[in-house]
Amino acid sequence: MSDQKLAANEYIKIRSNYLRGTIKEGLADTSTGSMSEDDQQLLKFHGTYQQDDRDLRANRRKHKLDKAYSFMIRIRVPGGVATPEQWLETDRMATQFANGTIKLTTRQAFQFHGIIKSNLKRTIKEINQTAMDTIAACGDVNRNVMCNPNPYLSSVHAELLKVSQQISDHLTPATRAYHEIWLDGEKIESSEEEVEPIYGKTYLPRKFKITVAVPPSNDVDIYANCLSFIAIVENDKLVGFNVAVGGGMGMTHGSEETYPRLADVIGFCTVEQVNDVAEKVVLVQRDFGCRTERKHARLKYTVDDHGPQWFLEKLNEYLGYNLGPVREFKFEDNGDRYGWVEGVNGKFNLTLFIQGGRVLDTPSYPMRTGLREIAKIHDGDFRLTANQNLMIANVSKEKRPEIEKLLEQYGIKDSHLKSGLRLNSLACVALPTCALSLAEAERYLPELLTELEEVIEEAGLRHDAITIRMTGCPNGCARPYISEIGFVGRSPGCYNVYLGGGFAGQRLSKLFRENFPGGEVKSLLGPIIKHYAKERKEGERFGDFCIRAGYVSATEQGKDFHKNIKEEARA
Ligand code: SRM
Ligand code: SF4
Image 1 (spheres, helix red, strand yellow):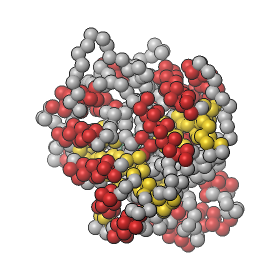
Image 2 (cartoon, protein in one colour):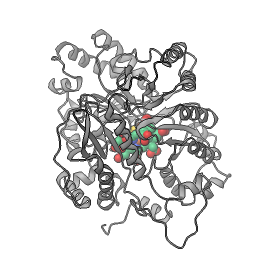
Image 3 (tube, protein in one colour):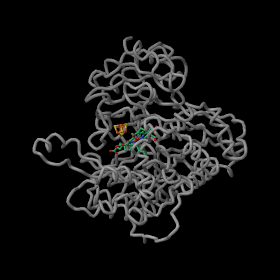
Image 4 (cartoon, helix red, strand yellow):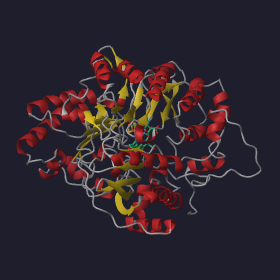
């Protein structure tokens, strides 16, 4: 480690006694709805963020009131699989403790919003009683491990799910703090210092993200993750995984030192080696990741600073053996397959489109109630997708008619009869809960899509899949820099518009317009969409066309993302 001063969070971790800090005391303090600054950082490791309702901020300030504090809780769902009982309990808690909605995130997790401090402990405890948890859902540790949500589509999917759950278990922090604080676990008094065998006292320099994918589907977006395992299947048998490292999205507007980066595929490992490889990649990042500048602390910068070859050599050294050469693979897309699909086990899977991942009831669309009724009779499970959608999975032949009847009754049946553009859209949470958002996303994208759909219809592209993603700030929570059209909040009502991302999430996009008003997007993109409809080549994707037609140039890799920004913004 260098002699430079460490980032402030490093000292918070050191002082925290393995993530305890003064969280217990803070929770007991009823004089305020908030927690201390340091504990707010530590709470993330426990799966919760302090927030405030930004819609109410100005008015409360005017009336000299404190912010309307509440907490977001993120529930880990490794591989995105939840039982009907877990769905029902999540649904119950959404009403009892949160704002009456369930958010399905871009990492196959559940989120609650609007939990007040006095309910925080009880909610986390009840989540654990459902055999789910929140530890390491956030914080400088490995987060929810993603996996293609389709385990019943082929025999290897079931194995993959097991692999992702194993990795998740292996990399879960060992500290007893979580049990002590939330689950009334006894404090073990011992003269021996507690150990955190993988992470150590200061955990990782920054968050860490893992996926497991089976080509040709890249629905977990491996190129945006720190570490991915890409299944290699030969003669219907899983023979191992290609290993990809160093992907990530987050950046800061105006800072060329920060940029999204695609993961590099660096080698191959066997199924038995997966846990070891995951652990050693984590250790290399623990030991070599930047701890002085948090904006430079993700694994993508460690890989970029030293080069992928250095990373591979270091990893091999930590492993004590060498990864094999990369095997051939091909991804075709990163979207979901909607509608009913029969699995290899003779059971049925239905993927529903959930706009913005927000499960809620509206007077015209009581989706949350419908899903609750389905959960009451469902004999399979639910699968959250990395595209914020939901699969009712593993439905028996006998149950399918009953489920179809409920889908019809609650108006959910046709959730996927939408334009290809909408079905391939993602929006992050943004306002009003996200403290970092500069513009709307989840609440605005549906409206913008309706405007763009007019052009799409005119151009005859209703059934064409085009990936489109919006985030309220450049942190990239909906992975906008690898979609064909990306909007990234710059200021209220205005977005940076990116074009040219790869349809399978394999290529970064490029800035097309800076700080552009959302209300004028239709007139900006309309002509390009029509041009595409008229002049695309057979099978040509929208993102590829935008590059061929010269709207933007292609971005090869991370640092190149900002190249020519000024020229292109002027074009
Ligand atoms: Fe994210 C921070 C929401 C996936 C990159 N993200 C946040 C916070 C916690 C804001 C904060 O720090 O105060 C947001 C909470 C909003 C709210 O009110 O709920 C937030 N991120 C989300 C979710 C819920 C978006 C969604 O609408 O689904 C996703 C939850 C995933 C999960 O279940 O774990 C979510 N975030 C992502 C992804 C996508 C992914 O992981 O595949 C990314 C880009 C990939 C990456 O990590 O590079 C992402 N979130 C960030 C960053 C930028 C990190 C960086 O390297 O710079 C931040 C800001 C930070 O960490 O400082 C952030
Ligand atoms: Fe918040 Fe920005 Fe993430 Fe959207 S991209 S949820 S605005 S941090």
